[in-house]
Length: 86
Image 1 (cartoon, rainbow, N blue to C red):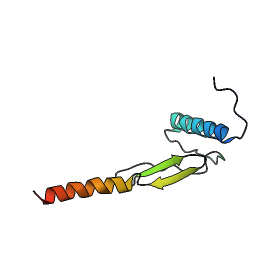
Image 2: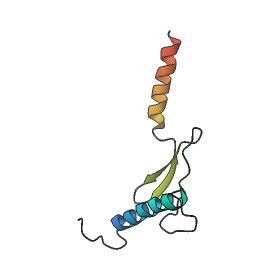
Image 3: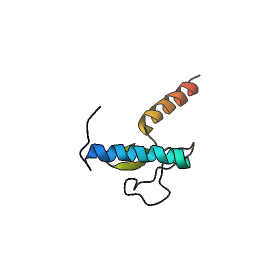
Image 4: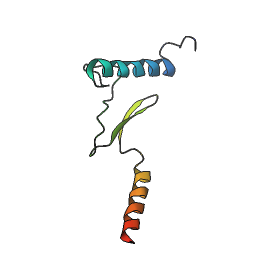
């Protein structure tokens, strides 16, 4: 419906990357490739209670930690101060 994508355009690479990650999840239970893959050069680490890892998916894949940290700190501080005043 959207027409053909230009080979190796950012859109083409993004679609192939996204499909590869979904395929890896279906095959291996993990979005990372078990072998070297030029589309997936960044490892997507698991999000846990102690390590809030995530993958920023744009024209590049960027592994990051602690999304929205500043917002969460605001709400945590507000909660702590509210409980201190009671």
